[in-house]
Length: 454
Image (cartoon, rainbow, N blue to C red):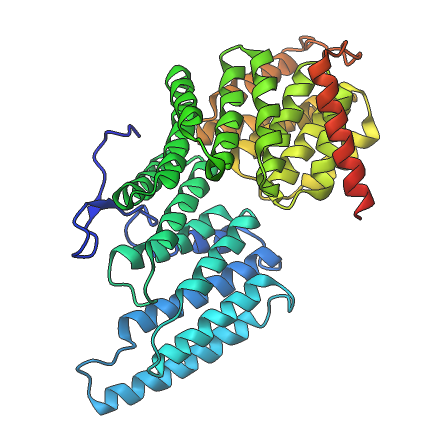
């Protein structure tokens, strides 16, 4: 959606008259917490993901019910007693569902804390729900449950700009919630709601004179522009962000901008620049999880450059140690491709099994299908290859993933017609320039350090 397009607005509190965008969570306007219902409808009821989604949903519905009916204002004594009895029954039911989650899991602890604070607020204490709700959203985000996380971030954001019953949400927390919401939607290819969230975060930051988060919101918007393939505009915006992100407080923003600029440079055909930008991002970034994301990009660029051995080491490090599931999945897909290119069939089978049955995001799911198809083809399984290509095409068509759709359709058509596909490119060692040797040494050192630390 174009950034200048009309968006739904809601007003801030009276002291802040600047209109703000509230990102829409339920796009059909009728079902709250739709993301949780979607998980319950699509995953196996015996799975941990299903139980976790059910526990989250019943907790949030308890919060909704308490927020709407819990005050007891203008109610008769009999009505209050009936409501109190129903509330206690509902709390018991919710707690029993939460108790089915793993004892040591963060989500069980956080959901229990949310329920405990609802009970306290129902008993007359000031509501103190912001912290556990935000922490729960972050836990969902870290385990790559992006749409679930966005749903909970929206509760925090809504409480800041409206009259939410969860307690006071300060501007720093609200800005972070909107920014994370944008990242979640962008990851799930929902550019419309991601744009709303980034715009909301940037507007609030600008109103407060918070230049750091203004830059961060601009970075999110630049990534969306790149996602629309307006590469020249994205390149210019990213370069401006790098130039403006001065000072020690903006080091991570500079690193993220370098990282995105590497992706843009590849798509513009500036391959050598892309490696330089990615390495600059990796060495500049201090956040561990962001460094892992950058290393995925760097490993991919190295593979494209003919340095399969360095790329294999980078992706093996990520597949073994990355904190975020999304990063491990990306690295494993890369390892599937490398195993195919190097004709390592046992490695191919091992890496493929890791992702079999995982609920991958659409772009990952399409890439997984494509590279599994290539692997089956390389190892003499054309029927399995055809099925994998079919799945990649179906996912890419459904979610409008044009680039992988073109590759998967070409592979499927060639296989159906009995035409020989182009052989995999050579994996012979490409002579390494000094800057690539420097990258190889850094990655090898990081893997040695990870092995030593257990």
